[in-house]
Length: 307
Image (cartoon, rainbow, N blue to C red):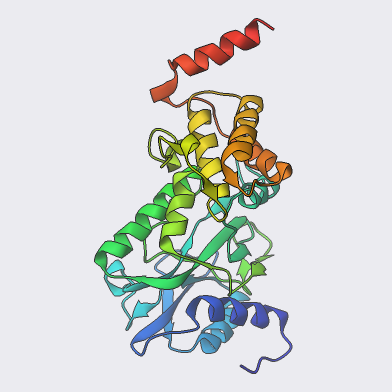
């Protein structure tokens, strides 16, 4: 596509091209916009061409807060019923309270599956994980929303996992904080794509509310099997999450992961990578309600006290 030398337009086109580059005949991109100092319903528009949508968004962004529908809309239906495919999984990480933009970057950096796209919204970060094959069908769409719910909970993110969600558009401005802040495209790799199963596994190994009880889907006989390349990071992260749920500290988790890595990973991960996994999981609160009375936790506590 031919783009004039406008950095904001280039970002917007790159972004929409990565997410909405292959629209079906009846699909459209939804834009919504609202004046930062006015109340009332948002205005909206629908576009069948990503470049046309990008140009309109950048033009509107000078005066308005502009958002886009992450999922393509069937016709001009911006509701949940109008979403038949999901091209990506996403999250909304605010930089407020106990979190800064730096801490949010560190959260993402420590994940075994890096976001394909990262947008700085002017207030926080919006990571997107592009899918190898868009999710279609009622059951798969529900599964995708469940993955986003678990991912959001595990990252302490905002509740933005509904399939009709709108998020801020790169190449525009965030007028929420007084002076306008640019919504920037920090990273975009359209070739970095995942299966929904990979992202489900990612969500499961996050400590805390993002996972099911018991440390995610860790096989009971994990120490009796070989952990092959491609499974090592997620498996070790899942083991670490299970240990953290039981209240173990970072030092102990690191020691256990080193042994699992040495004995079962083929080939073993480099030690700095194992340390990174242990450090990442150790940032989360230790001990879920199910394991606060765990004998394993008492054993390790007693051992530390006896030193």
